[in-house]
Image (cartoon, rainbow, N blue to C red; front, side):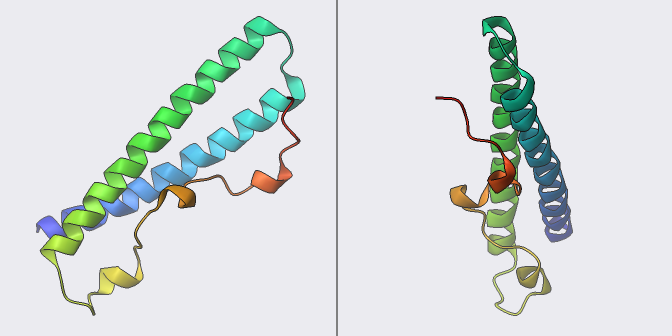
Length: 105
């Protein structure tokens, strides 16, 4: 029963992670194109920081659920192994990274 719970946690975490990464990409694009002046930049930066914190929390939740799955079901031919992979830090990035304009320096 706990294995099914962990599989559900992994699925939910991946959906939440994709949603937050898409939101982050849209926020960055909006910030680079539309935001000018110090106050608006500060607000948008704070919003991006909060979004990044949520992304890291969701990634940690997935990693914990995945680690528990590996402990609970150690067979190599388990069906969940084809659905879920280990999440590395370099895997957590938004898909439209190449479409963003260059950040102001």
